[in-house]
Image 1: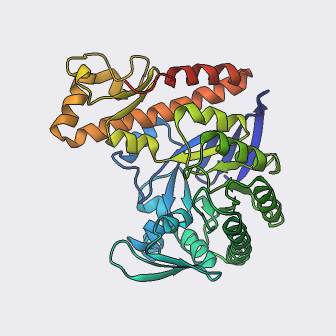
Image 2: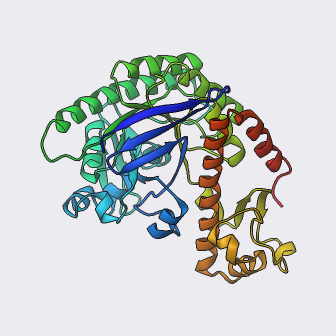
Image 3: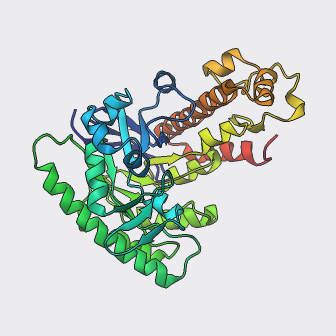
Length: 378
């Protein structure tokens, strides 16, 4: 199967339903991508991800470059074979990771010089290097290296990051297109990343500059890093209004269940976030009735499933009292079961969103989801 993207339905809200075809299978959009930073979604076997219906997962260039190394993964047949995953993979460029290593890195026009958080060794990540690593990994979708900055940021800093992001995107695109013509490279789509912090005019300018490079897909980066949800929506709307309607749009690093529908209504097709897996490891369960903090004493004798309305294998078999006990006892099974349920919840939410778009009633569905979470965790 070759790459293609088709929109099959548009909701009155502006949401889109479609299919992103890849060599490793089709992806129904809008889609939420579980994060598998180091070639694994924490606490879940691939068999569980397949059972849950995950169509695409996310891996990370920075982490896989440092350990076990992209050349080793290439030697072993690429990331799909290495991790025994025969569905689609998107790899992030590592831009966000080096952004978070503020004390261990230095950014110049050349690239990012950083020290490994593992052993302190020094490395240089350039736009070309990020593309090279992702070609070696053989992911289906590869992100260009961008400069992600904190929020709020002064305008001068945002302007400088925008300029550098565009320059890096040009270099990454040139390198990628030259390598793509060589024999033996796996088929791959490369996405550009729109930056500009919370300045609407800078976001529009970033989008215009990247459109000239004709990427097959575009991401909105540098959001969900501290700004209010309303600002994220405003900026995402500014960008999606300029992006081509026939190409996938990816909002990076989002979001909470009650926020996801808002992003979909803006015309976003792809999202990822560590929230469902990270929250699970900290005993926070997402349910159709809102968040459940399962360590609370009120659940000690609660024989109901985590979510009475959930069809996942965890909810069909285990009680709240049992999962609370596992967390209290420090058992590994606690994180495994909680993660299984939370990932199911997110993927099922996306399925319901796609269905709502199909019937043209996403606004009503959005109101219902928001109401469930208005009261906060229990």
